[in-house]
Image 1: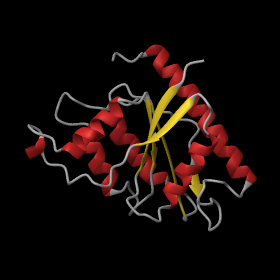
Image 2 (image 1 turned 90 degrees about the vertical axis):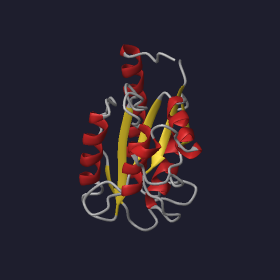
Image 3 (image 1 turned 45 degrees about the vertical axis):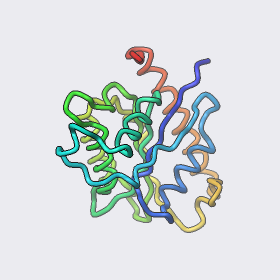
Image 4 (image 1 turned 60 degrees about the horizontal axis):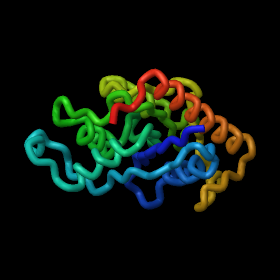
Length: 190
């Protein structure tokens, strides 16, 4: 069995992020064939085309981190019925300059949690639209809109609700199968 390196990006910049807790839970239940590594976005300045000729080191590091993984997992909160600005900023950095899009042909999954009853459904919808434009093959099922409740996920990623834990485990198994399918059809060129 091949091992795949999956970079996960937490869309929240908050140190108390419930989506960071969700990411820890997903890492915990990931199949052994998935090596999970976080790709940090919090130190990026706001993107501007003025940087295209000479990216700052933090933006070059972001693009390299994405290049070094086989697939991506976006763990996003929902702010004002959309994806967070910090996450969109990171995507703008990684997809530029024109012709150097880091997301092209990179298998990707989207998940998130929110205290609201519909989880992060609208943020995920917006994010999927952006990633489709960036030519990232997207796992469209299993969709995952997790309603967060206090105590659902411990600091170490342990999930207290057995049904949610089972769902997250299944999600990661489906992500693994999706990555295998995509990379079988679109093998990495580098």
